[in-house]
Length: 207
Image (cartoon, rainbow, N blue to C red; front, side):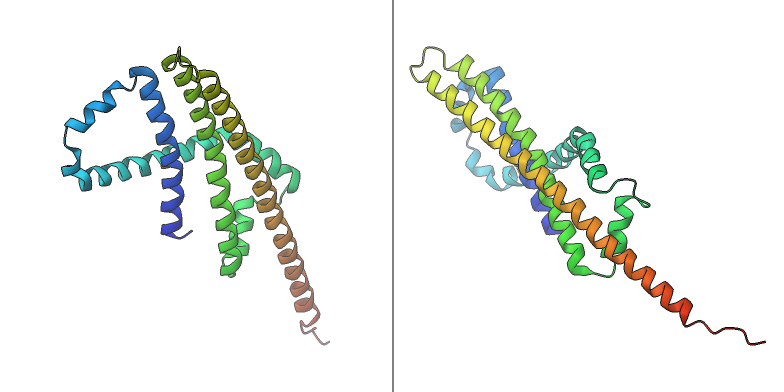
């Protein structure tokens, strides 16, 4: 995977996690303190703040990507075993064999894997964002005539986003393992043909 693609992937995951972390802070301490930020003069420190924020978001993306991997590991294993039951080699080794001499196929694997990681982390991030948004509406918008509308909006949008990302992740999983299986079966078949031809062409000992 290219460094740029990996950096962008982890930034996306980290930015999503930052949203629900911000909501968590607001749920606990409220949002009155946000108005005080205007008097601090943060505009003079924009460059430093941006650099620090990107560093935080990137590290958060790394951590949350690993968390999402642990959460989805059993589901990932079930899908893999459905498509590639009892493999002779680990899937990672099969993929390495396929991609080491085929850059186009290797890029296809990396692109699919990248979208899988973004989709699985997004499903958790969207779920946590929805939950904390509901808490915010219930706690901080009490007495607001539009509270029910905000609550309904948060629930419907949250369910839609989580469902869409879970569905996307599952489809990408099937695509990825199906791609590995189909190409490795073809690779193994060609290797057998080459082995047979080499045996046929071997010189025989004359008596």
